[in-house]
Amino acid sequence: MSHVVDATHHELHRSTDWKAGALAGLIAGVVFLMLEMALVWIVQGMSPWGPPYMMAAMVLGKDVLPAAGTWASFDLTIVMIAMMIHFPLAVLYGVLVAWLIHRLDLAGATMLGAGLGLAIYLANFYVIAPPVFPWFEMAQNWIGVFAHIVFGAVIAIAYVALRKQDTADSRPGSSAD
Image (cartoon, rainbow, N blue to C red):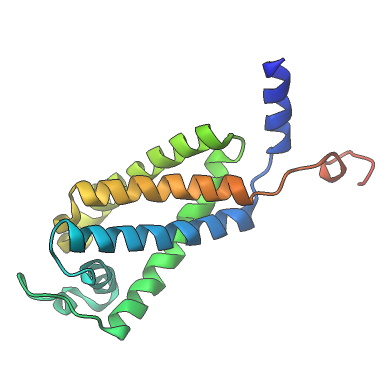
């Protein structure tokens, strides 16, 4: 009987809901940013504005980063530039994760999403960033790992909650076509 349920479940999710993936990426992007900023502040005792400065430096250059040992203060320009980098990437990752998990149920999607979040961290912080954005080395720590795993899991959870069900009427070859 469970095989029938699984087959029906997979049939209901045979296509990716791109809009849900993009929105899931935005939701996860907000959660990620808040989590990382809070952990940097609470656990490391560093400025919560440090992560946005690191993101903005991808466009503005490393000279915008606060000097070592100084407290990064709120700067609207820095935050806006960081968000212009962070949220399009979150949407891109959201649709990528959605495409990879679209046939899965909540548990499977969450596990794979968390794994994909870890893969995003490893690719960005150990492959892409070192030669191009070396200041990201300071974020090669458990906070970065944890925040990315949560990011991937939140994309998955949000996507599963938001995705539209394929119905018999919307499938190719159905009487509604």
